[in-house]
Image (tube, rainbow, N blue to C red; front, side):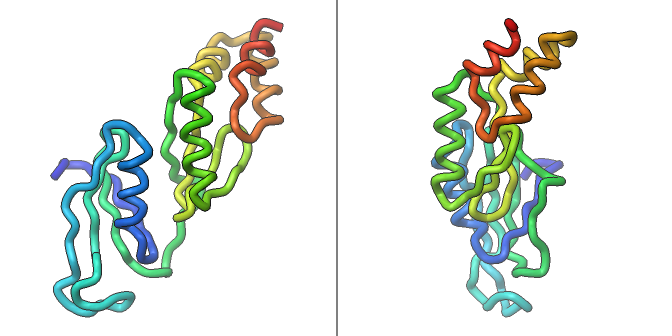
Length: 157
């Protein structure tokens, strides 16, 4: 087990979430699945209690802790994409699997985890500064899923 692991609280679907991430993203996998050795407030003995998994190489632990806590945008996975095709693939996988769209490249999966699907073109254009970054920022603010062609057009004026 990694020395530092992101722990994500799920109501009861940590294993389903881990399997979805492993199927969707490269360098992702489901590891050990631990079952509860006894009854607990939101589950029974034998229920999946925790699931070790990785998301694009980041070690995570999903815990089925019940409905006491929910996710919010204060935590998100940011996925850097190479082009529109990769951006579309991840966006549609998350949103098309019961997730929801938000703004500026953000979306949530069906378990409430926030994702930023961020094309490199956007990151590079914002880092360029000046008027180009201002135009890119203004264009991004009108988007849900990032449109790489529109970002490039804004960058070049």
